[in-house]
Amino acid sequence: MNERKPERYTHGHHESVLRSHTWRTVENSAAYLESHLRPGVSVLDIGCGPGTITVDIARRVAPGRVVGLDAAPEVIEKARALALEEGLDNVEFVVGDAYDTRYDEASFDVVHAHQTLQHLADPVAALREMRRVVGDDGVVAARDVDYAGTMVHPSSAGLEAWAALYQRVHRSNGGEPNAGRQLKEWALAAGFTQVASTASIWCFASAEEREWWGGMWRDRALESAFASDAMSKGLVTRSELEDVSRAWQSWAAEPAGWMGMPHGEVLCRG
Image 1 (tube, rainbow, N blue to C red):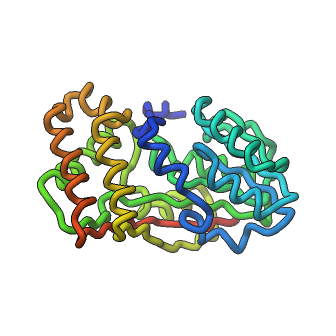
Image 2: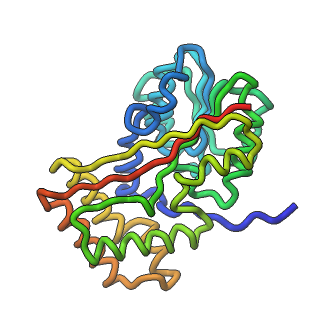
Image 3: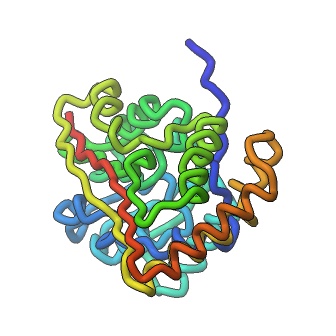
């Protein structure tokens, strides 16, 4: 068996990153799966992060069992705190491995992964594991962004530098930043016989949306694991990151500012 390439989560869990992750819900991040989230359905959410999508799923499928799995213990603690705060007793959060979840075959009706496969060195192997633990009549769902397809207006030298740097940093950690366009190919390689492919977009255009997204990347460009990783690998200087940070701040303040982030989605069976 070939040895798997090293991988590392590009974003880390700095507050500026969790600002984005805790915004996510079924409505804005998993609408393509919504019709499958019926009361009584069991769900495994792989790469659940701070658990906002997972908790939303748990509300929708109650009393069905929901498990959120993530490799980072610190973010699992945040997810557990959220579930406790929401008073949900049908969801649990565990530290685990996307390649080896330790669950029996056909343990869940739905297995879901949002923005997870892009960070894995072997997404096909992870999809095979997802296929193993879903029931015969169940569905495996995955959604990932496609960074190369991101549209930002008005553009600037700083934002163009960010786009190029993001590709380099993400790939240096063993992931695929343009995963959205490859989900169907990966699902077929994992052995699924039925793959329904769709796409959706995050759009940030209002003053509030621009301040939220632009302000988040203003901080992430300087303070998150992305920043320290990029500098430690010699991919960028602190001064260049400061330029990127200012570019996001300027974009956020621009009344004509508009951003679209395309995502690929797959619903897999068989």
